[in-house]
Length: 366
Image (cartoon, rainbow, N blue to C red; front, side):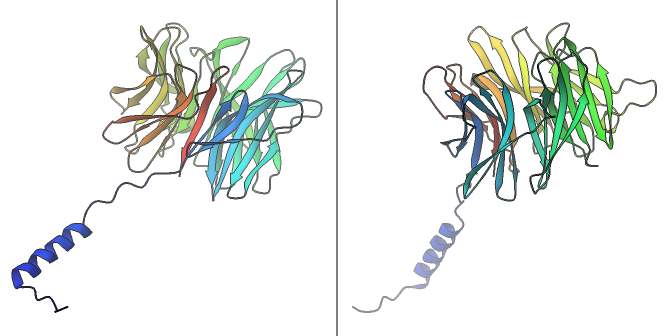
């Protein structure tokens, strides 16, 4: 076959085509998505949509996975299990390329422990929850080192009372900041700081029956989401001083109304998007049913993002501005929503089986 001879104009055209092809935009890389929750009362983790059942101890009748943290190739999954006697036990699992391993939280001698929230700093885990027996429930948190050694700190305990640590974050100084409640007086929010010894502050205008969460921004200001106990308004409390430590004779928090809700509305999780705005997840009820919602507060105004029918739970963010929200459809199906930087909402249903259904409580991406 004779050699092909190209003229100069044809060479220029071919070069242009080559450059055009090489500069065509690559499709965005999809992250790995991890979701923790339950299927038919069994704790599971979904990895890119595929469910993995999590081990429990013999005699367990139901279990749940409620929180997650990622470090150095390992996903730490927080949960609880309940036995035939109705006793709950806190535990956590590790998931990596080799599979999953189960670890049980230990309370005081003769007591039980349950867990509510999980965070970490490098390989150290921090878990909030409670330590309890038949007559007393004490708010507590655990520190778990990289070798798996556990240390429990009691935050508040009184015979006959029922205290519970609901959520926590760790400040830049390495001190856990924890919020919790008293089941017998749900109009009081407890805020504990563990800085060598535990200090306590209380606030009396928060309905702690509703979900609440805590987060700390890069400047050290503390944010708490919850519900006003008097009028059901969904609220954001922001510390006026670093870590909520009040200046003398001042209110330590400024109060921001996020949504004038009904008694059925509630908030679930709080975080910060790529622009540094505060994002709160939750539910608002309308005539059509529960609407999974994100409220975005930029320091001045609040934007509402409706995800669809259902219940929004945990939230995580990507550097490119995308956010992912774990939740439950109005048909009681585990799902998550992704919202890109343009505001486009996409839903992925993880499980469609019927009663008791499936629930998604926590989410992270890598």
